[in-house]
Length: 141
Image 1 (cartoon, rainbow, N blue to C red):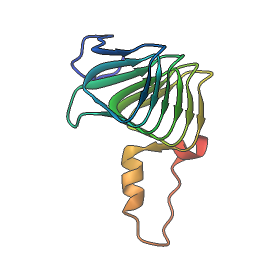
Image 2: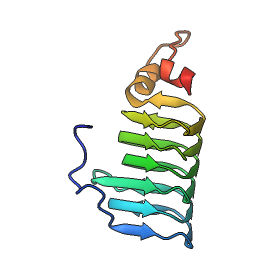
Image 3: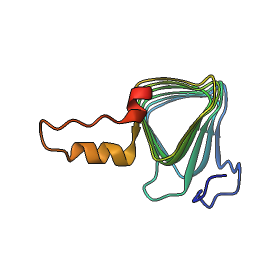
């Protein structure tokens, strides 16, 4: 359905964080990362790496997420930065701002924060003082 997906086989998981695992500290990854447990810290894909983060419905991240492709069906407390595609599944709960290029939100997903298109956010930062631009996506979020 979406074009320009990373060249990872569909559903490839290189690293699994199981439901009983709690990680305290920042996590850097490439490839497919599937989180069923809890991460207390930042979760960042390596710069330029083909990477997909999938947060299962029982999983949670308490910190910032940065990855090209992010699929959330669990709980996130922190900002989410998706360089290519973001999917908020029905059980997704995000408390933080979401920066996206392409977003898909399923019925039932919840976002408490701003929904900001990455190109719109960059353009708004370049406006001279006194000029104001409303990003309709952020008004909805």
